[in-house]
Picture 1 (cartoon, rainbow, N blue to C red):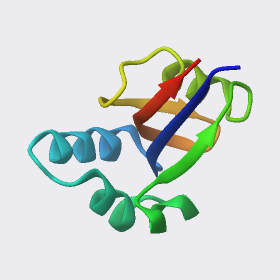
Picture 2: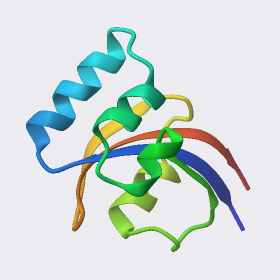
Picture 3: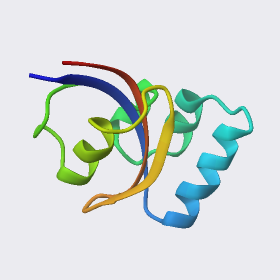
Picture 4: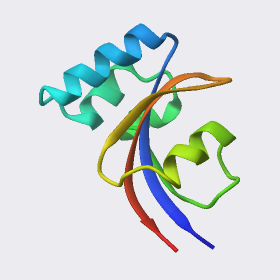
Length: 93
């Protein structure tokens, strides 16, 4: 079964998500941005979600994590919880 590790930042608007993505692209540290802005409890750990398999996260999140490029910041990804920036840190089959 494939496994992936990722971190994310959860916010309540697409505009805020895009703004944070730009800050990261300009050199801001993903973990620091997550600690400061994410509304998910994982924000306290820099957005780290640990390792998980398909089906353990909502479908929109899984689609990005198991098909997107590793090491890149993806998003905004809209789910029932809000808007996410997702960084895939590792993936293996």
